Image (cartoon, rainbow, N blue to C red; front, side):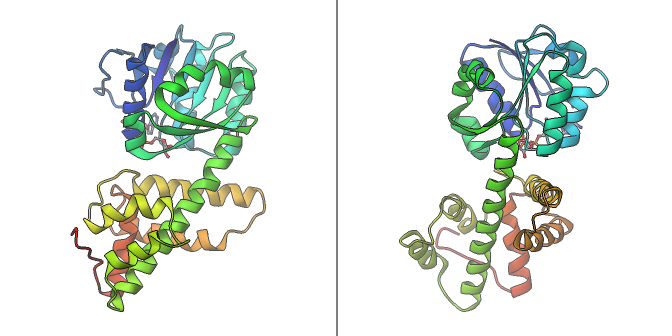
Length: 293
Ligand code: NA7
């Protein structure tokens, strides 16, 4: 398929690469010039990338970035064509997604929200899990592209339900990780060996994919970003905004947001969100260690 891929960040770069590898005709655009994908053409603007494309796929930071890419100067809006599908893998506001979709649909284009989970490693290996909202026929048309970038798609309902679900998923990741980080901090302060604690977690109902994924990085004190703290912070804010719009109270997430505020002020924005642990360690006056460290 002829695909315009907009946004070559940590995720987008690998996703576009996998589309090329699967034989699609890809044109890429990135706000800051100079990012390339081998085998893909490069366009100077979103409008230029989208011209003649069957599908425009976005993967940019946040709601504002998607708005810019679609409706800003030289945005995708200028190159819409009847039947074109605009797919968005950024994690953004569900209510803004509905607004964007309505504006594009009024011009004959189709909109699919397809945020994903799987981090940098999933994007690189083509094993992302897509969480999708949109029309059945559109999602089916995108099938070969989903297959090139991911291992599974979950259909959550009509447009914006992918984004709504993604927020509900990241809410859990943030809280599960926070629980793990607080447990490690307390156990360390009380003299418990972290490797032994983690073995116990893995053998009991406390185990989780989040702990399994993050534990080795923490034990090696490797906080290079698989999922940067600044983006999880953004998702926490989005989730609290969506909750406010829906008149839902999320007290645990409100507290975790404060921890992310402080971890950001501490200079950890561009590290992995696992670096929130370092704040707890600082308060406790300890450092979590494992044999791998
Ligand atoms: P990154 O690595 O932070 O990349 C973000 C991308 O978004 C990058 O290409 C940025 O371009 C682009 N960006 C940021 N702001 C804008 C605006 N205003 N206009 C156009 N493009 C912009 O993020 P990830 O790849 O890890 O994640 C992307 C999304 O997937 C995000 O929503 C996650 O939560 C999930 P730059 O190179 O800075 O010019």
